[in-house]
Image (cartoon, rainbow, N blue to C red; front, side, top):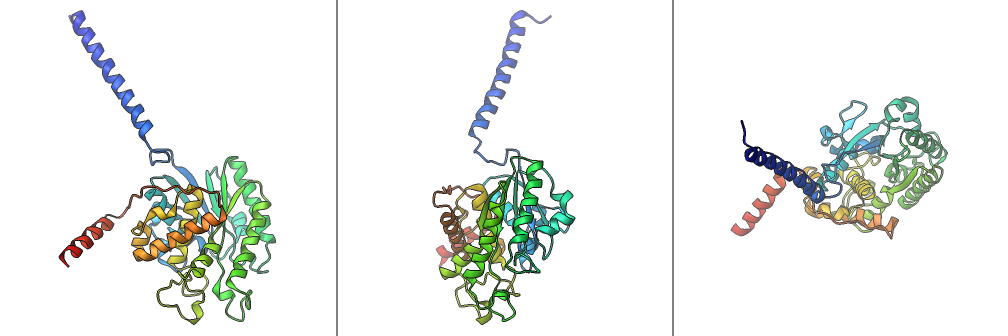
Length: 336
């Protein structure tokens, strides 16, 4: 038979252990940074077309396993870039994409409604690059379909956070004679696209804002980071934001798109990602190129929301080779 003192000591030890476990858990919970990967992942859906999945660039299949392609086409695209950026910022998003080549939101409503009609936390979407394939520049289709999609998403989750992406000017529509914006400037086409997206936002109470990707491209051109006209050759030291068809984006162009979405959704400063940011590193950007594009995104985000506070953060790189390369560079510098 166990004596009373022994029973007491065992009981006290058990209580003490239980107290320590609870106390330790509480402390860890309090110390866990806000938005950390231990919180329940936010469900994020990207809806779009080739401008979303990164056509004609290595972005198309970039880290495809990190996101869910709801069409089963195993694409990564801008959603995978965003997933990488947000993970580097210690944020956890369950990222999904639903894309249709060469299509506007009307095509998603017609053929993909069961896929997108779910209770998402965040949705980022864009329409066809010319607004309307049959009537380039006409915003009516974008305005109407944005409202229809937003209404459906809101019905599934009244708290859904919806964003639109205002896309870039297509060089193939400006410089060649056959282009719908021929004789006009990149700035004018970008402006026309942005006005259409602003009208679409105004037509729905459920759309949070418009992410100014097209203006970010223009800013890169204005500041000399990117070349304005791919038809006359690319100036040395400048980037080509377009792919070889002068229509879709290059890896640089899609990187700007992802940075803009990242800054807009998270409220974090894209400059904190740094010159060795994982996506830029794996896509073969130089440190100067990565930093320049992050600066462009920051400036455009601030221009769109002067009162917006973009918080700095400590980046967590996802590719071990980044650190290895840094150490090798330091060692080489010491030898030389």
